[in-house]
Image (cartoon, rainbow, N blue to C red; front, side, top):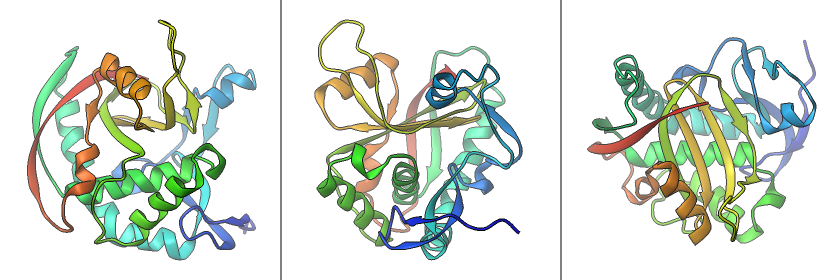
Length: 234
């Protein structure tokens, strides 16, 4: 049996043995071997990408925090992903589509916050905002604006992507947008960015679907959301 890595849990902050966190949840289709072309793999010159044997995972959370997330957020997130998968099968070259989703918005936002904490090192987010994100996750009923972050989604096609924090190059000049994480595996992909003008303009150019408002919905409330999602290749 392999020994668990010991480190600081990205959610509770305690130094503990860290479980292997599925980023996206395993029940949302993130299982099995996958090769990823990430910034990390490119920097290391790996022409075939970085190989993950059991889905896109990181050792980032302690087991109690991983269990809290699984108990409160994952089932709703998997339900949202299943709807995305059913749509994904029927999309043939569409650039952008308007579709209805029945979901628990707050649970989806919470899971995206978990993914951000798992992917982005504390140093890449200023400490007060990093702690805000932790508190948002640790209290399942907590809702409201987490104003330093924006959540986006899209229909993902092709190779998986799995990147932590980076600055995206603004080819037109000016400030570069800050991306805290980019995770995608068919059917859906996600960007979590800073909430600043450069990042918002960049997301608008990609026509990403902004679901930041999901964080302001109340716990356990199911709603029908009509969302414009672009279709992008990994």
